[in-house]
Amino acid sequence: MPPDAPSPAPDLAAARDLLRRVWGYDDFRGLQGEVIGTLLAGGDALVLMPTGGGKSLCYQLPALLRPGLGLVVSPLIALMQDQVEALRLLGVRAAFLNSTLEAAEANRIERDVLEGRLDLLYVAPERLLTPRFLGLLERTALGLIAIDEAHCVSQWGHDFRPEYLGLGVLAERFPRVPRIALTATADEVTRREMRDKLRLEGAGSFVASFDRPNLRYVVVDKEDARAQLLRFLRTEHGGDAGIVYRQSRRAVDQTAAWLVEQGISAVPYHAGLDAETRSHHQRRFLREEGVVVVATIAFGMGIDKPDVRFVAHLDVPRSLEGYYQETGRAGRDGLPATAFMTYGLADVISMRRLLASGGAGDEVKRVEQRKLDALLGYCETVACRRQVLLGYFGEAYEGPCGNCDTCTNQVDTWDGTVAAQKALSAVARTGQRYGGGHLVDVLLGKSTPRARERGHDKLPTFGVGSDLDERTWRSVLRQLVATGLLQPDADGYGALRLGAGASAVLRGERDVRLRRDPERVAPRRVKARPSATGLAAADLSGEAAARFEALRAWRATAARAQGVPAYVVFHDATLRAMAELAPADLDALSTVSGVGAAKLARYGAQVLAVVAGGAADEAEDGGEGFLFDPV
Image 1 (cartoon, one colour):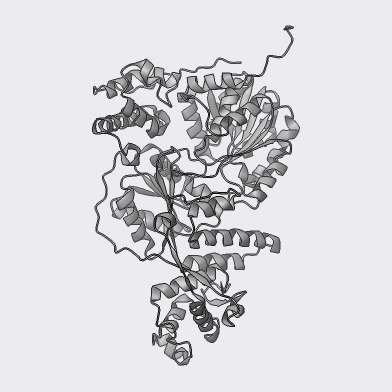
Image 2 (image 1 turned 90 degrees about the vertical axis):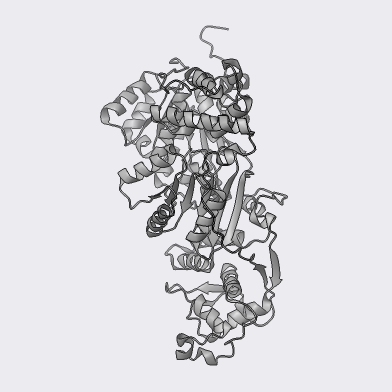
């Protein structure tokens, strides 16, 4: 080969070897190999892969094999810090530039960039788009550019970030550098925007299955959301880490305080808290075992914590994209986890009213209406929830999955045409000015002061619904609002009025099929489960479970000594494999999935001591141990 000829591009054999040495895995999962092969050959890629599917490896690994710096655009400080900490423990020369750094530290990292001392650099889009930083990149040899959470470019999406719209400049400034855009969730409209606005017209498209088979989906009829959450935690997830989403800051604060009163380690997180408090609460969640964060949707995007065992929505999310993204933060390690939601009439009315009262244009409202209808359809379905959820993203799923509430407790339907006619008639005869509570009183024939004062006790519909109970009537009204036969008035007072199609139902020209909500199980007094192992240690033998507990205790000590989250040292799944295998030497330990060369050198002797039943030496940082020399 002539001396000036370019070096051949690394191939997948070299990529697999690096995967084994650095990450400790034997082979790629799903589409990872195809994506990595595309980037190694110099091509662009648009990647849709579910949370926990291994998206980050798709750009981290080729960044180490390609000459030059791997640049990662990320929207959240927490994501940068977590991934950089994890990479450095793997022996990778990684750094981030964000607002948390002092000027001197930021300047040092910029010098490392110019002098080729880094493999990967994480940066926020706001900093990247500054003239100073673009000038720095033009003096740097770039190996690839990764745009994470790329759905943020879509104005139709649930996490729109205006600064993402400027990232198309990367195609103009660095036309020969392969680029990869990644997200965990995007419908067809969002995918088109990602391709167009990020200038990835010719990029290869890689769409993995959206299925998260380890997640169990549960939606319950809302009665007392906090009490329902507490029963759920105590019966299924005592001592587990999780996220609880509420729509308002006030609800976040009240729910977190109430959980603490119930003996659960919980912290609030929302934009109304000062930055120091938010940072402290996030660190607790990441670095302590079994912490529950109660948050608005501002929390969670980019959080790499793999052992989140549940995500609970006590208020209905705004869209199925948002729901999928938020629930995807549970069970990233592949172990069982639960997506739990409480859902009731007030939620449906609130969401419908919010859409009707918004000041958006007609086109935007049509898109939002479609998204809301899909979300409410998911909540009301009697079919397999996983089938409905995946179908929204264009993925056919035969089902039933056997791992959602509608599969494990089959839901019936009933002919609700007459009930719907009674409810719609009550709305019409009371002047379309009253909310669900008063309408149910009229249907049941309750002679309340309000009914008597307004003469509603004299209406033909007064008491016409005495054949059904109050809970069933609230379910009927909820489903009529969900389907649009009833519409909340935009005045903000919760009044219901007739919607499109109501006249046809009243005239008997349209049948109505309704979901029969499952009977409520009487609350039981239960004690909190003092879980330390949780689902991660399920089905382990007695000796293996004891080893797993000892390994978890050692990991917590090692993580504290190094100032990193416990999962950055090793995931629960890796500790479980160690506990089962009980390796007696370093060669055996090196075969455990998730144990690469750097971690073997750093932690191997300590792990073997714990597995053997002895006490490991005091956990130490062990030095940087970087595996890669400057290119």
